[in-house]
Image (cartoon, rainbow, N blue to C red):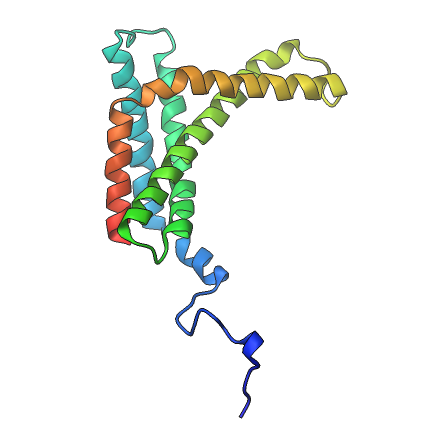
Length: 179
């Protein structure tokens, strides 16, 4: 018989799962991606529209651009957030799964929407920046993008309230129960 030494035995037991298997199981299916991502993107765009409407700013000049930004941010964030939540939530209690999905959906949606905002901001201000590739250009690009992301955090997060928070809780509950 081939007996493993005590130091090399699998401490977690035969039911433990490898990291590669966990990552593979965390990848969202095509159905979850192609149905969930547009729904999440529309929910975030509707949340932004409703927040602007509540503040009587729904007739703003850039309404279509704002709604497109929030929709694209939600669309891109859904599969990445779902993957992250599943990686963190596998084999855990429902409360932990809920917290994992909540955290990943918040970080993913705000982070990716803020990144898209920063890219658009950077694109606009790049016409006044130094030549591409220089050290000054690098600093300008870095600080312009960082200030744009900060501006989104300060001014843009409020457009997720109140409907975005409700959608977040409902989606997190649904995802936590399904697993």
